[in-house]
Length: 392
Image 1: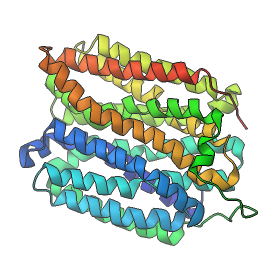
Image 2: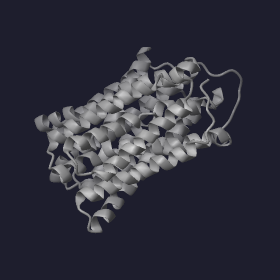
Image 3: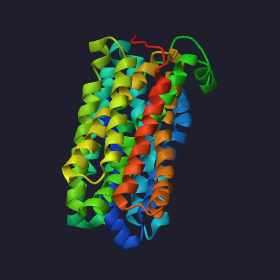
């Protein structure tokens, strides 16, 4: 691990933090600036949609400009700038603007590290190293749980956001100093995203990537707080504890998934098995949304654990990419993954409102929402079943 890779991982810790922190801040934002659950669902959804849309220009920039400037400039302007806007927020619209900026700032950091992995490291260890980076970065989920709750209790949510703006700017400066661009590939081969889309083997992988992360990210980043508050009367610290448990499960999942393709000699069946289990956990939570609080937390943790196959899916897709299109290829895969989360975040707010307006009690409405997450995963598995396996 070079210094540049270490700071890219640290930047990814921030990225994971920013995609999950609204869940813990939601009570304070609601009380202070009137940002309700639907406002935060919109803001969180925009984070993911903007993050996904940025993958196309980020992929071009990685291949043409390199990861050093791509990651450092966007994180400084978007990430630190968005955190500052959040600290100054006077209403729900400010939160939306802040999340859009933060989404832009976070968009290149994971793909910059994966780009360096794909170009400078042996293909056989890509999934393992990608899992280590993702698992370590998911510590941001831990920071966005109980530690964030403590910080909000101690210095307030505005003071917390100013501190985060400073930390984000510092990390961006460290990226500018330490990240080294890989040597360019041999020859002057050119290509575009359209060339990647012409590879038939990638399409089932795009589908599973689209659905894989949506339930875990949606529940951890948004729905865990209102669900536990409305059904179990949980306060901020209990919500923070539950978020911590789910975050730890997601970290464990990333580390566990990483070497499984080498252990079992397959990527396809590792991914398919994990996503089937994730879908079943969602359906179980949907069937029993008002059991004991710890039963609910255990099922939420299972969704986080089994839904962590992202690095193996990236490795599966990367195996079909030519060297000169690695940057655009891995970012296109990421676009499908993060785009799926964003679309589901947008859809989940109106869906829950519709279910609740139909006369359902909160537990039943949340259960139906979680069951829809599970059905989405199982539908993706049905398509991915026709994918071509490859471990090279």
